[in-house]
Each structure stands twice: as C-alpha cells, then as structure tokens.
Length: 375
Figure (cartoon, rainbow, N blue to C red):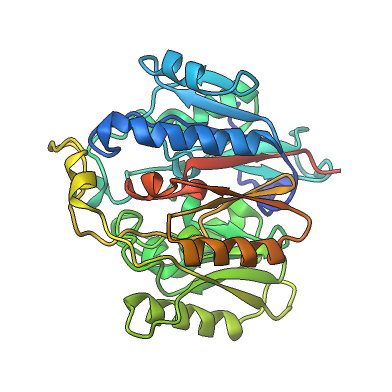
C-alpha cells in the first residue's frame, strides 16, 4: 500500500540502528562480473554474516531463482530464504529504509506503526558513472520486501542509498557532501533541498555534513557507513588512521574537525571514538583475475586500494557483526574498540570479510535492519 504525503507528515521517523529490530534482510551474491570466482567465496562469507546475525534476531535472505536452492542449502534452516530477482545484493542501498512511529498520529488517517521508504536508485551514479548498466531489478527490491511484510510504502523519486545516511533516532542525520551532493545523483537539487527531503522522510531535525567519505570508496562516492556511524545518540565512531602520509588521514581529520565543532539536534556535543582502518589493503592479481570481465559492470583491477573499514559493521539486537580483514593488529584493535563502545553487546568478528570489500562494500552494505514497533 502506497501512502500519500511524507513519513514525517504521518509521524514517522527513522530509528537508530542500535534500537531493537524485528529482523534483518540480506541479498545473495551471484554476479560473476563483480564477485570473484562466480561469487562462491563471497557466498561463504554471506553465510557467516547471516548466521552470526541470526543468533541475535531473525534473518531473511533473498536469492534469485537460479540461486535459491544454493542459498537454501548453504544457510542454516532457521534462516528464511525467499526468491527475489535483483541485479546485485547490496540491500543497504536497494532495500527499503524502514521508519516507525510510537503512537497514532492525530492528523494521519493511517494506523500502522512501521513503514518503508522506497528511494530511487541509479546504480551509484547512472549509466556513465555507476557500477553496472542494468539496475531494473534493484529498483523493485524495496517494494517487494515491503510487499512480503505487508507494510506501507512511501515512494520517493530522489536518488538515495541507505549507506549514505546514518541517524541517531533523536533527530540527527550524518551524511557526506561527496555522495549526496554528487552531480551523478540529484543534480537538480541544492544542498538545502536535499536536507529538506531528509527531514521530511527520515523525520530528522538536523543534518551534519562531513566533507568526504573513505579514501578509495569510489563505487559509492563516499558513503557515510564506511566512514562514520552512531554508536548511540551523542556518540559516533569514526574511521581513523595515525599515518599522516595516508590519503585517509586528511579525510578523517577533516571529519573529526566537523564533528568536534558540531552539536546534534538536541544541542549535545558529539563524542568521537576513533576506529583505526586496516592496511592499507590492495586487490591482488589473483583476486582481480577471478572477476569476469564484460561491459556490464565496473572493472575490478589489480592494485586497486580497497575501501576497507571496520566502521562498516552491523548492529544487531545485542550483537555487533564486525568485519575482519586478516590484518591481525588492526583486526584485534577493532574488536577491542568496538567491544568497549558496545559494553552490552557481543562483538562477533567475521573472518574473510575481505571477500565483500573486493566487490565494493562490507557487512553494513549487505544488511538492512527492520525495526520493531516502538512501545
């Protein structure tokens, strides 16, 4: 069911990821021109991620018709597997952004308390700058998920991916200018107009704009979820490096400066927790050779710096699902820092998360939380 008006006009808002979920959604990778070796190594890691999340909350994995049996056979029985067409499996960006409201809104004719935003999508940049040429199936993913759950839908023509926003559930949104102001998304909209859309659809009051995302994150043009996220209201975790010769240092330092001089929607100063990045890590010749080369998808080239970040984790109900890249020093440090930041959560490290970053994202990018109905 489509709802007229904006979510905020009906009393809806996007809760923080750290708030309770009813389930998590993932897609199933099978695109051989983006995932190496016919996506077999990536599928193994997706199984690890889905299984880890399922210890804390229900999980639904969506797989194409040709891959449904394969996914069903690899995933634990308690994980739901449904058939769904998609161009690729980045459900953070193609799935719905779920919004909630705590009570019936007096001016709304609609009674429900959970709904979804179906943003427009153009493969992170369109025909000339995107990651693949056909995204017609991806355009329907959000609507299909909402249909499965029998939840109402707010349709929006503005191009926006879920990985480009992080909210605190109390009126504040984090994003990057590099992504949302990129001319390959919504060139007809000004910064103020984009803010107005975010306020009307996410139910927020304030947007904190960080200049740029993670160095090397060219696929998404600097999504916020590789750089910075809310741990809880008033506290953020920021990708960091101590190496001043690393191009990431300048990006992290400028983000730190903006955050240090900002307050959230409730006027609070923002506490910043630094989370050191791994590496730097680069795509190997063997990895690049495993990706099918064609004219449909962005090529994966040996020597490319990987946009690897520990901040690209998923917060489940009582758990944090954290990428591990095989860089022992920083893998262990990430576990330590994230465990301290989430003292009431179990931090689960996912070995082999490099397989996901080879294709352009990580654990947060492949997941989409569905919140519970607020009390």
